[in-house]
Image 1 (cartoon, rainbow, N blue to C red):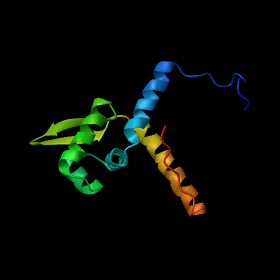
Image 2: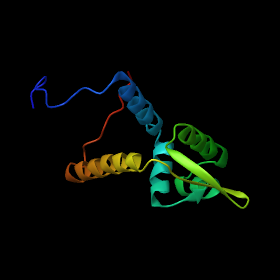
Image 3: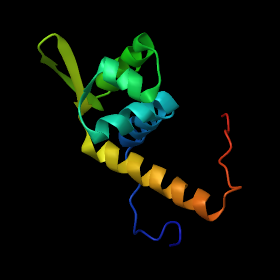
Image 4: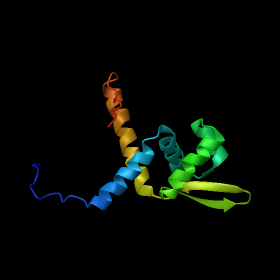
Length: 118
């Protein structure tokens, strides 16, 4: 589709800012892994730390950031705080990206995304 064809309206600056913030949070492999793990089911912080291979304090800090952004929620269950994905649309985006990268890597094993610093 040609640029300016009128078929797509540009999102507002606020929407673009919110999207950039969400992508920024998910730019951390640890936070991305946490969201991926929570998409499989609810977990407490120790279960998440074990699943993602992170230290308990670091996992807790990642969860706090994700919770503050509204991507993850929590509820108390006895003495444990149970975390869950609070935005199913984010899970859909994460799954789409991971699946797409998995497919393209399987088709072209030498293909690898490079880190670009702005």
